[in-house]
Length: 317
Image 1 (cartoon, rainbow, N blue to C red):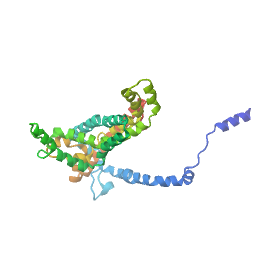
Image 2: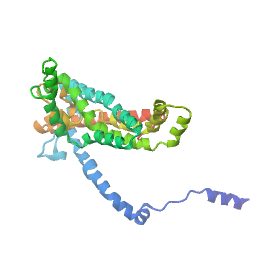
Image 3: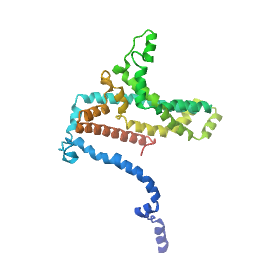
Image 4: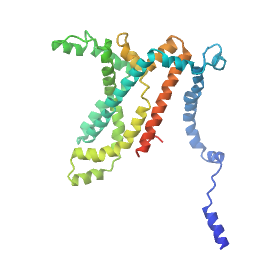
């Protein structure tokens, strides 16, 4: 009886894993392949975080990071109490929130429509046409916007004049900055996101559609009950990532579209950090604003990831 008990304990004992160095020695080829990515992350992602301490110092390039005097939360308090704070926060949130509400569903709808096309040749043509704008650089896209919406020679204003209307100075109007920014962003990036959803749609079992056809379901019902639930995990993951980037409005495009006349609507946190930090050399103040922005994004990312996990949906972790 005693021998049986000892045998049972021995069988239930956990298997001891080999030491880490031994496992690395056995699979050294995999670690060699992994090394460039780890080095990149350390050099360009983690090592620069050492410089984030200047947000809590009065940074002076002569004294360096450690020699500059420590001031704590002084720069954060200055930013929150500044007259620019409310406008920057509202502009950044408004443009990103509208872009998320309007632009996020567009690639999903496009993917669902293209997935239902029966002609393979037309399907490939449509994918190419929709995906092509993503290869155009932001500088070229902004140049196209200036040409199309020019008050004198732009095609849009010429069409307005032909219908008896007065030309509109689109790039100088704060009210037109957000529609132009969001509309051009949809045209440029919706095709790229559409490819992701199309790849997710190909993973859906075709037998589900065949069974639904046998039951008399039309295309709309199959989209609603098969396609959408099938790509819902991908939609959830991309939505969480988009929420986590809510305060990070693309600097390059905003700065290129920015003029003195539309500044009340186009001045966002990223452009303000550039002007304060590089143009005015207020390094500590700009670093504090950037760190404040990153912390807000992190809080949103963690919050929505927790909500998705609690709702039994896919999450990042």
